[in-house]
Image 1 (cartoon, rainbow, N blue to C red):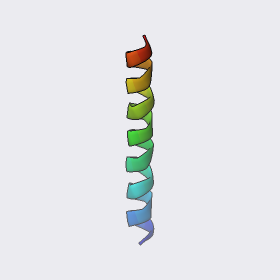
Image 2 (spheres, rainbow, N blue to C red; image 1 turned 135 degrees about the horizontal axis):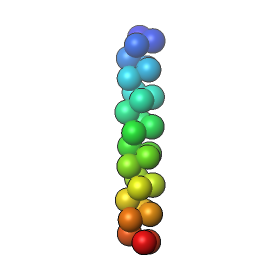
Image 3 (spheres, rainbow, N blue to C red; image 1 turned 60 degrees about the horizontal axis):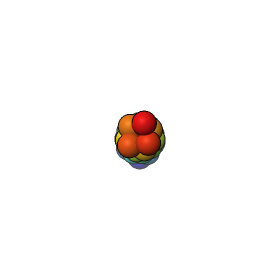
Image 4 (cartoon, rainbow, N blue to C red; image 1 turned 90 degrees about the vertical axis):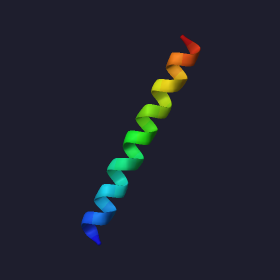
Length: 28
């Protein structure tokens, strides 16, 4: 369960980073 939660956290963080990068790319 802990490993699963860790993987979900990493995936969520990657999605968030990609989302912010997309926003910066659109604004730029």
